[in-house]
Length: 79
Image 1 (cartoon, rainbow, N blue to C red):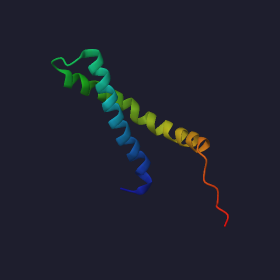
Image 2: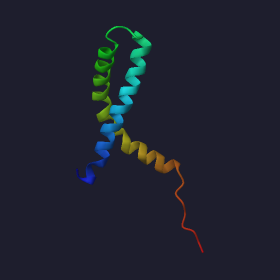
Image 3: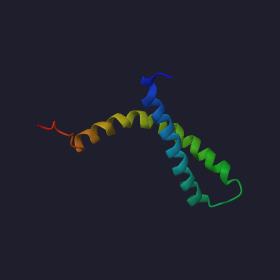
Image 4: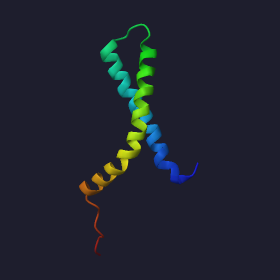
């Protein structure tokens, strides 16, 4: 895979993992460990991921710029 696609791959994996975890927690809180929990979770996760992936692609550059403004860059050391 081309290195220029690394940000998209990163967003794909990050959104998959985060939406999997968050939808699992939300499903557990709302339904409990009922019969069919796994099906409910996967269903919630797929919908969440469909929203999370494009959101990450759009929001990540904004977040990077904000972090860049909030974090001090090291100045050149004078010898």
